[in-house]
Length: 358
Image 1: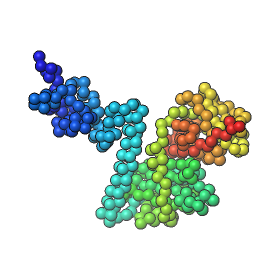
Image 2: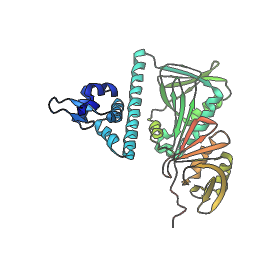
Image 3: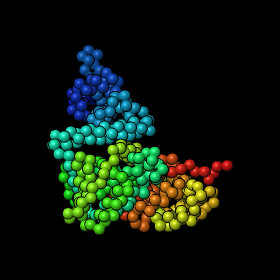
């Protein structure tokens, strides 16, 4: 029996793996997917059934827009090399999609001739969101050098309204679900002092509308109105920060109030070190252990240091009895979450652990 009887022609193989014969010829020329057998007389290419997984992976990588140079690493490199290439490509794809979406939305607003966006929220809900994110706004001295860090970013979309603040050491994001929405997505920057005044006014109102038109922000409810000036600055790309976070390798869940009290007992004399030991969280300041707390700890033991003045506001902004710390490494931002409120996320930068310095 001819050896090719157990093989598939290029047409049959193409149909089986979802690739065009011309693509298979191209991948043969590029040494990405070589046929098992080529007839010397006719030049016909034949493929084996065992080549299907590789061919399907090639198709999926190309459908994802991956260049062949990167696809070759995924196909033939180590698992670690493949993961690095895939994560990098995914990050660039998100950035490209976000940029394209922003550009298209701006063009659509221009075509419609309307630049007005309006959303409706609960007054107390808005006030709560302002209370949670504003501790992450920079202090007065830093604002003088970087005025944008004294602002809160407000992003209005029909699916979600987000308030974002950062001082470069903390990042706080609170998402709200609007009860109604009109217009295209937009974003504005407002001063933190003025926004706090609005929040105090809105807290007593059942509902409040936020309208943005030509970079003017207006809050109104039941005939009462408040205008808020906007700030012409460029806010840091917080989405890129969130998207580039490595996966958490350690998770610590503990009593938020107890952790807050333990930090207060440790004082504010330099960095505070947190260390997991089984299902226990140990706090140390300048070397000596100051407190031990019960905790649910996953991952290998971890030791990490924080500036208490940065960590405490993140804990105070949370909701509910528990706090969750998601840690990728002692040098990467730590995600501080609440089990009772998934719509609020804050990031805290750790500091160098000096407790072991000679």
